[in-house]
Image 1 (cartoon, rainbow, N blue to C red):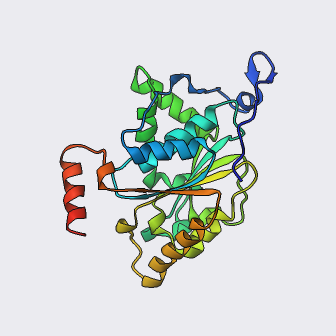
Image 2: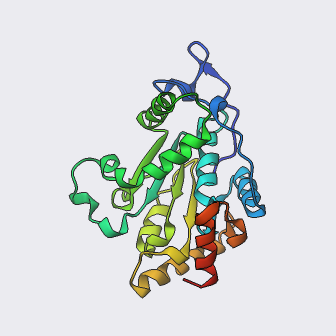
Length: 251
């Protein structure tokens, strides 16, 4: 269940809080940019997040659903007043669900999809050089502030004091979604980002599972569902033009 913000100003050691002491190189929100919503639905997403709701950001591509969710989660995890200590970004690699056969741990195997999230984080911090950002991002991963999981590795775990971001939800079947939401532990909340028009699932029963799972979430009081439309597309130039044309043609 999501936890309300707690006053955790007690300090341990010389000028460090309990949360900072767990980190090799403490990072806080001082270097993060102030990012404001650009559309009405983005504002709703910010507001629902501030109310400590579990969230589903649903709708058109290019609307900033994942970016805003990750931004708010990162601010929370780096804020000493919250109980949240980690961000878990979870998704399925769909075509490579047999990820377990690849060498390395879950971090090594998820490298294939980490680049977009790294680019998002880069935009969230005001740092003078590329080297400075690489050091900061490396620390975020080393200290476990951000970690990446595929659905192949999440079973059997309980995730406490965390914010779980389930991205590309439309590529997960009902069994995977059910497995993820039942991993939510104490002082943890979960965010789903989804664009059902872009699903890579080919079996109709798997596609139906997405809608069944959404219907369950709709009757849960702790979950807010915010639907984004084409009017919320914030990407510019050719990308926005293409997304609008694609939506108009129902493709």
